[in-house]
Length: 103
Image (cartoon, rainbow, N blue to C red; front, side, top):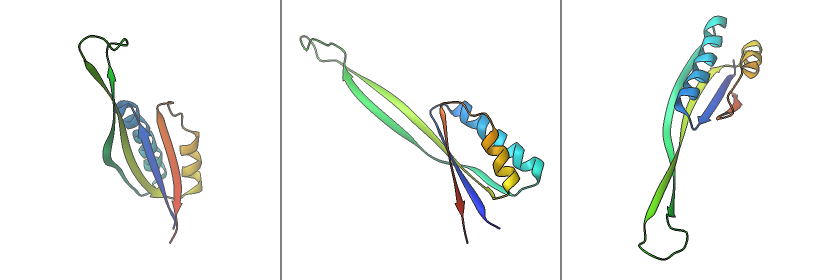
């Protein structure tokens, strides 16, 4: 049987966990084998800017950081399960990618 790999990416780890839990609940209700959620390394995007817009005076900088949390879930590619997963409500902060893995 084919497998489906679901890649989840979000800036908010709490909302990411909620989406992962809802996917695992669907697979548990249907009795489908799952692997995950597997955490992958968090990507940190840093931007350094000057505080003073004029350029005169003391140089002082601020650093802003955005973290991208990622998870991977592998499930069996059951059409009913994939349909239910695609119908779940997902916050706009969470990005989902699905791909089918063939043998």
